[in-house]
Length: 385
Ligand SMILES: *Cc1c(COP(=O)(O)O)cnc(C)c1O
Image 1 (cartoon, rainbow, N blue to C red):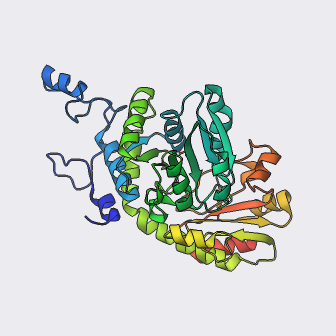
Image 2 (image 1 turned 180 degrees about the horizontal axis):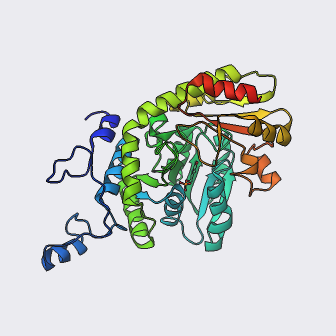
């Protein structure tokens, strides 16, 4: 099992006496002991046995082990959602008086956590420009503890130079934490560029079929130990049923991402230069401003492309209304293609000024390319344009 994808397919929870080929789902909230001594030893942490599903569960562990293998991590912990993973990755390490350095272009709810909730607990933050790592060191303070970013960024699809970010984090002894939801471990593995932690919303491409919520944090063993201690007591545990769905999903993630990406590249190439668009961005198009970086750190361009409609907000709404096949929904990363309009949905809570700072223009449309035939997706977009 030398390849990560093989591990992700072959790692499984222990087979029961029934010799089932697919792993069973362990829908149990707790685990029983044979005697007082086994119970004592387990609670004393002298063995690895299961106690209670808020702490650990075989189905959740199988999903975690598979994702750990795909990301090339040492250990991991799975959570109920992407946001609970992100919050746990912050609160396990940041305390009153600490400072978080984060990229300015991040998921809407993560932005809310950083700007509205962390300050309530005395944790400061500074946002830096995702596309210019040369300015980051000037923003580092004596109390800076963590560097947090997403690449490709949400929703503008800028590419952050992971190797440069990793060097800065190492030099200043910062915990380097990357949200790898957009690229997935099939598209890029931030740990290979120096990330200490990788957080995921498994709700998106990992599930890939719009069924369940889930999240995970993987990375350095010593850091995951602290995250485990935090999560064990605060309770963001992933449900075993969702873990079972997500664990099966990891078996097909590689082939799905290959098709999502090739469909997206095909569509991006054909839409680029369309008279109704002022620009279009896809990481693996040579016209992307960070194309060289994307090519150096990503294995594929991913399933997301975005463009700006001439005509702004009104044109954006008309475009959505004219689509016949693409879904209008808040999720991303599905077999079914989705169109979204960040200014009125995911980033609606930001002020116009904050949106402008992260390049969310009124006519920005994001296409989450699904697994339908590429020409059907393209033609729906073309007729709507
Ligand atoms: C959706 C998303 C999240 C949050 O995940 P949930 O599973 O919805 O909690 C975090 N980061 C990114 C990039 C996302 O797209």
